[in-house]
Amino acid sequence: MKRIKLYIIMKKLLSIAIFGLLLYACQQDPVVKLEQKLTELDAAMGGASVTDKAKAEEFIKTSEELAGLLEKANPDKYVNLLLKAAGLAKTIQQPEKAIALYQMVMDKYPQHKKAPTALFMIGFVQENDLNQLDQAKATYESFLAKYPNDPDFTDDAQNALKQLGKSPEELIKEFEQNAGKPQ
Image (tube, rainbow, N blue to C red; front, side, top):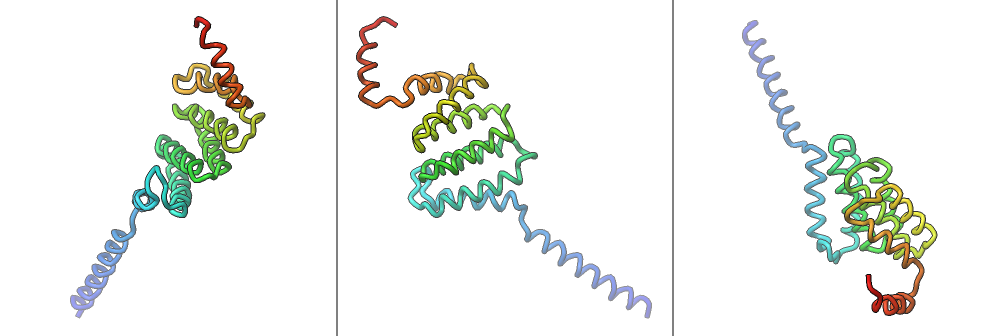
């Protein structure tokens, strides 16, 4: 009789253990799940050309969610996700969102190798999308103070400051005046 009870108890425990394992296996790691969702959204929104704005907005939200999970464990992936989401926000005419995402990179990882990109892009969006020339000037100046030797954007920031607020006609006139002068 004891053997039968023990057998029944063991059988129930084994069934519970198997059920638990199956349940655990069916639940995906949230990081993997979000990465898969981003892959699907990227294709659905039309990639870089963005044909579906709603999917692009969902991509941005999902990127933020995934970045939050990776912030401490994988700084490079965190930064890359936010930079891509920020660029996408700019593409779909959400400049304030783009700046907020670039700013998240600057706040969390100002020493990251891609932090200069984030700071420069804040100034670029302020200048070109929001026409906030005073803020753009301050941002470009901050960029040059923090990253004076950045190989990708130092020249761009210096040129942006020189050209800030000038009309296309003024820029053409300046170019024509300087065209004949030796460098």
